[in-house]
Amino acid sequence: MPKYRAALPQLDEGALFLTDAGLETTLLFREGIDLPHFAACELLRTDEGRDVLRSYFNRHAAAATRLGLGFVLDTATWRANPDWTARLGYDAHEFERVNRSSVLLADKVRRVWETDGSRIVIAAVVGPRADGYVISERQSAQQAADYHSWQIDLFADTEADFISALTINYSEEAIGITRAAREAGMPVAISFTVETDGRLASGESLSEAISAVDIDSGWYPAYFAVNCAHPTHLAEGMWDDDVVRRRVRGLRANASSSSHAELDNSDTLDDGNPEELGCQLGDLRRANHQLTVLGGCCGCDIRHIEAIGRSAVASGSSVDVAAD
Image 1 (cartoon, rainbow, N blue to C red):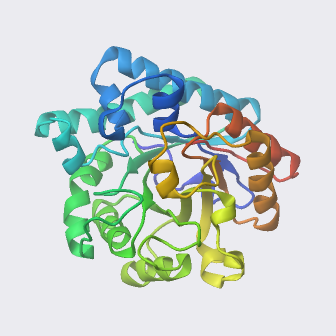
Image 2 (cartoon, rainbow, N blue to C red):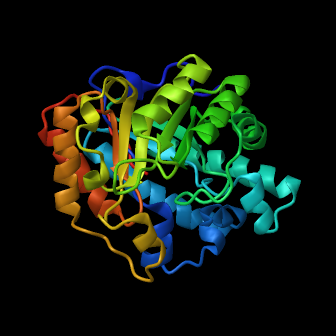
């Protein structure tokens, strides 16, 4: 029986969860592991690969536990949807095996590190059908629901606590993922990515995209978040918007302030300044107490997560923290 599916603890008043850092960029640039199509799910196919993932998530879960914070524990499945796994050569059996294996690995990590003071929630990660930065093909909401249901229905039959849709860049795909999650009886958090002007790649404001999903679904998502964007990319006055203030509970920041296009075309890793990023997210938390999930994305590593956690603890808030 999924431990927290009926009541996600990151929704509790005063909670604060960390996520891990940038899984794919850490593996590629820091550990020198080749990731075809940027797909960390490839490591789920071998014992050696699973050991690498387990070590990565153990580091982050241990950091949250040391700080007395909660942890949102992702599955390594951002690229494990049907189109990307087909490019990787998976058949239907392997597609199912890899997605289920990701949750089994997360559950093993949770069993090691969870304490009464550091709750660990398993997030079944769903990524965009196409590119996370550029809208190369735009689905209708129903097309997206039909497509993502293959992966979401699998996760519903595991110990995963909720669906975490990351790096979504237009509202129709978010609506489709929400429909599929609702049909499967899974809580869902939708995380949009924004450009340097604070808007989605579709041109929608964060408030507009959230409202589109909520209106279609009857406010079904447990919460919304922003990931794969630096704090300086958030639109000026964004937190003054009532929709954003009520519905955005998570922020997973890139280490670099560079644009998505610049990062996509770079052969080197820009890891920014971990302490500065930690302070920036801590300041945002102090100003916006509804933010209960803080963590990292591209270019971040354990240093950034520890800095974010220290800043959260220093804020004096009651916390449970998670890292991506």
